[in-house]
Length: 375
Image (cartoon, rainbow, N blue to C red; front, side, top):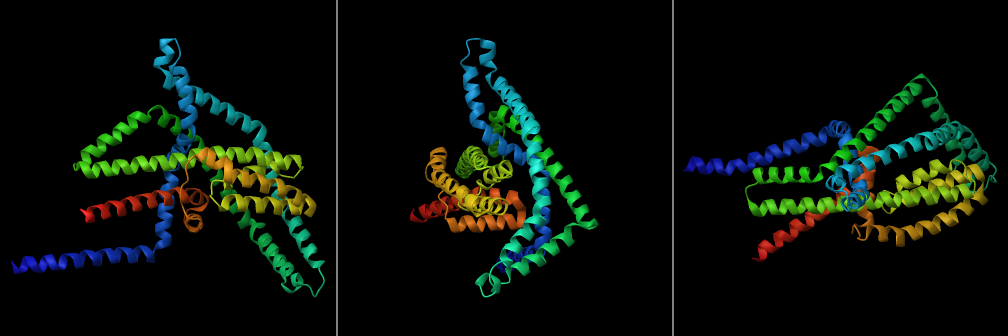
């Protein structure tokens, strides 16, 4: 009895010691851990893209399926889902072809022209800052000399064999990412076609692994809520980003701002980051417009962009989303910074829904614990 008591006494201490060692080793090798996680996400990136596209395409796919299910021809009505998937697939091919033919050349030329113009823009900013009187605040801050040193470091870093090699690796990585996106589109169509079978499979797996009905019910409830949060965020933000792309690009084209299509695409992508994204996009657009077109044109662009962003944030997006994610702006900033630091651009985009999911699970767990204590 005494030996058993001693074992029972030391067992929790040993478990805690092992856990502390694991935590210490994880923190001590955090860069290797994050690299391993990032590598894993890169391997399964087609599946991740597939899930994202499936959430975005679910609503149009369901509308087309509902249309074909009401067809008077029984052959079409019985195969409404397969036909709707085929129709969505054809539409995607047409859209990708149109983008490749008409949009991509403009974007590529804009990127090349913008990159080639960077040294000239640096010189323009430095000359403008040097034009201030010597006793002014701007002159005392030595901003022009700092920028001059930065431009020299930039040119030395990238305009050499090592920099060119790094750029080539970046192009290969970008091509690989495009392939993952296209593969993700195919995966999304399969997910849409077989979504009910996939859900039934996971339900059967849950029943086989978790025998406790109460625990199984809670886990299923968590998955339903996670699915709702992801669908709300991805589908709503995706549609709102398309609206942002069309409106922002149209505004920039009206005012004849260079790189209008590229800047409109940037605004659409940054729109996925709540609170911060739209603000960052407007600042970058106005800054580029200031450099390329002067102060007058930058102010002309700023006014309609600011009005549209206010309309989008207060009316358009809430109307599309229909429900708020209920997350603090401070938490959004922390989540975006952490996601960007460890997982890059994708981490910035996905940080907010991940935090919302964990917040929802934590709130429900606390609520369940309080209910059990009251009983």
